[in-house]
Length: 303
Image 1: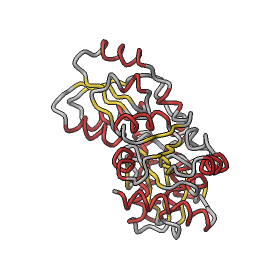
Image 2: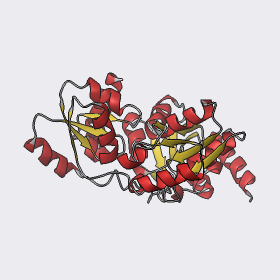
Image 3: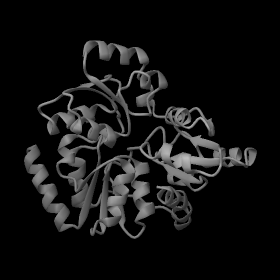
């Protein structure tokens, strides 16, 4: 079968087998074309709640599928590839954060959504890259332990100097690999192009940015902007997707380092097998779902 034939089979099988396909924006374009919903991780888990299908397939990484299961425990949740993990989500464990909570009892623990379900059970509130500043600003406590991404945490800290934000050494190794020198070189190579950067990048990169935001915010900015040339400071796939959606504009990757191997593990044939045979199912203990949901519900309450 060729790509179009496989896609047609996926579209047929997902209807036949009552499957809703979620695709994170970092997935390959041919996967986005067969998805029911495309977007950032938390946005997708909310869409899964609304979907009528009894089975949800997450084309992304494990923590994203876990979040879907937390919000939709009654649904069967599949992950496109069992080995697709997230180094950032797995950097810190429950025992470490429990120890720090005992040591710093006045601190509110803020967990980036890019964390495991188990780690969320001992956190006070979740945030996304787009909501982090808003939600941390609304917290009653001024003492904040922000985990796991120290780059996103540093960005929040800069925006909210009134808060006492403690950071740990952790983060996305893909975004953190890019340097300020690369940002300067990219702007020199593409004069006039706007640099759009994800806050998981280092502060030395953010310092050169014309816009800082989540993946969805970067895409929305580029689509709506009157400018024609952009340097994209997040996963390489986003420059490609934007080129499809805005053929009259030009998009340049900030760095060839911005390649997430875990996100790119999923192939179109993996999606085909999942909608055909069922794939790898995500299961979580009921207690984990209940405890992990608290910090997500608190995020929703705060906006």
